[in-house]
Image (cartoon, rainbow, N blue to C red; front, side, top):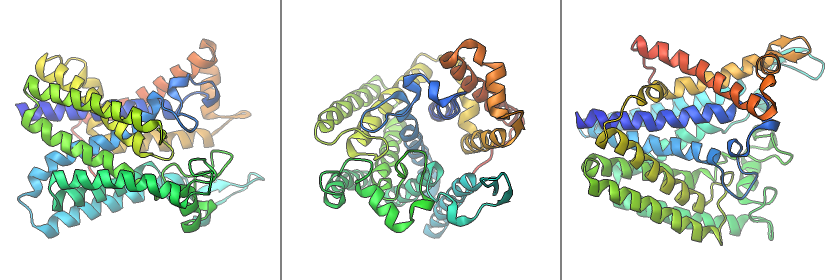
Length: 373
């Protein structure tokens, strides 16, 4: 029974992450979103910046339970599962950005979208890479050794950004080492183009410190399995979270918290916050036995990647379908939510869109359909 409740807490934590991720990714109008629902422009932190690292943290939590199954399997079986899952998640992420494979050009003529113009990296791709590296670390190394390596990576990454960034521009969007490496490896056409400066927030180099979020999630998951039922265990988890947040605040003074660069201080800060949030969820479920509210987030937590993919692909389809002089996405926002005002209407649209995605997950859950990757 204790194990199932810990799985419940994990499902809820993961579900909360996906729920918030969909809300912040699909506002009715991105220009009129409330500030907490936007990423920090560069240095700094908003609640939205916690979503992605929390997902990686939850991946690590899940690994701590999967390790129990790996103990009874051969090395070849384990490695096959790790690399297979890595490949599938990475491929799904890449195909998601390439979708719908045919796109209109400047004259409105539809044609094949070439590989030369597609983005290679992204959210799911980073999850795949961090899962792969993190899994191999915790499978072959002791948890303490894995943690020490991650700490070394955080300090090494700090140095790499200064050693290989443009002099005087090491932590700027134009001159940082992450952008320089991605440009050299992939070229501008395979990078993220949302900002005025071509820069990929899920770049190759910045994936290294992100592994720390996964390994931290694994270590916390192991700790919860052993000490999660005791008040002493929860107290230690809360204190660890508070200590990490304090350490991140101090590190921020010399190495700013920055989600797009995934700075080392950002890793420490988000792991600290996730420890505190997970402790609160476990306390409500495990100690107070308040589980009435959990069913909503369980729906997201049980089909996480499939619902996330749905949310991303559906919004592309809505933008491609014309509705008068606007897209169907814009038409729905203008005629269904704009009456509530620019900011509130944009938020209500995002919540409604999240509920549509949730309803699909609800049907899957009712039919006991769980799409595993």
